[in-house]
Image (tube, rainbow, N blue to C red):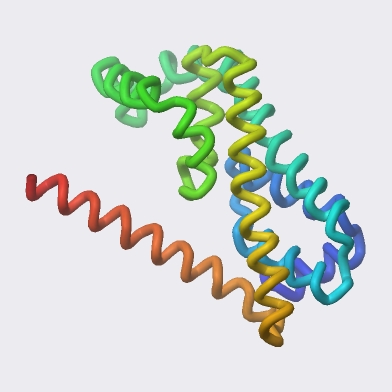
Length: 195
């Protein structure tokens, strides 16, 4: 989806589109989440959106996505993995390793996993599959959602105030963030292999 289409949807449907894009992005349907959050900040600066409704739409979109994925993981995930996991290489041994690693840092993974594409989408499903208590998941999700959406929206807002940024260039921010993420992943991977 290009930026013109995204802007058209936001202009036509307003805050509902922010909610929908972030909801789908969290449950695993590709959406330009970070770019969208930055764009929201720019549009707030340009007076196309109002701060509080935009932040609330972003928060509830991401948070509802987290809760939905948790519920799917809790009630459907485990039977699905046991039945079909073998077809995609998920053996009992691999599942046990991943589960132990996830359970050691579950709160941190939920809170800071928002900043890692892929982890952000998988984490709530894993929390549900591993029967993390709903209260723990709820509190970690609220904190993670706030710590994820606010910095990107504020960055867009302040960048829009300081520089004359054309919204058409916002998707490149998502590409830059993806490249930074992949670089960090590869550096850590090679460090571990060397050690």
